[in-house]
Length: 115
Image 1 (tube, rainbow, N blue to C red):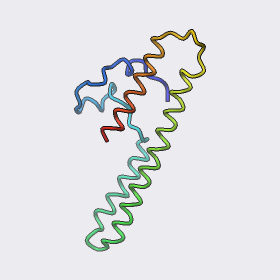
Image 2 (cartoon, one colour):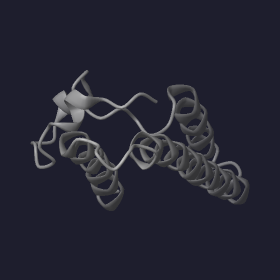
Image 3 (spheres, rainbow, N blue to C red):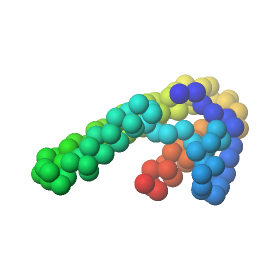
């Protein structure tokens, strides 16, 4: 993932809404194919509950487990990329660049605590 300087300059307390999903909103934490796969699995669990409630609950539990695993992996990769952007820079790095990195950390952390 590339560091998005424009996004990092946006205030963290901007209003939430449908516009958030547009080009200026934060990119989803999981890739669309992974989100779709998990959603289909959960949907199947919901749709088959009447016929096989225990199996449906097991499938829903597995979908949640998969979503959590994918989220942990995605966050670890984002953190690795973000850290690489500032950690290996020389001590004379512009404070503006460091401030942008801090904003990215803030955005990700605030998204997590709003879950």
